[in-house]
Length: 130
Image (cartoon, helix red, strand yellow):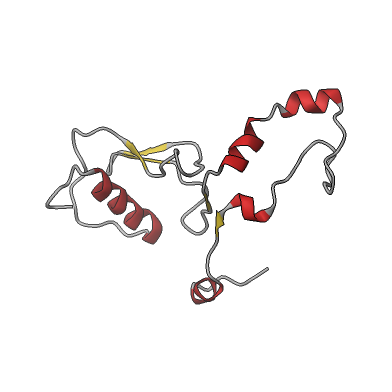
């Protein structure tokens, strides 16, 4: 941070360090640079933005420092989201085969491409399985 305090990646890493660990580094606040998103929305799904003036980063992470699942965008998920669900529900479109809900098709798990914690890391972090 001291070498390149206005760098995009340096500010993201700085923000993540302080946000995830809850510890503030002895660094001055970032000045006179544009805000950047913490999560790249071209490749991952994100949440509503909340500005961190200290880092000049828009926190758009889904969740909290304790749990924030990162879901990568895939063509299957983008197609699923792009469907006109309101119109399909209005027409009463018949249910998809194998779906419990009459108005939705849930993509198979392999299409979701959800990044999950490794069980050993989860246990090491003190998170108990449900």
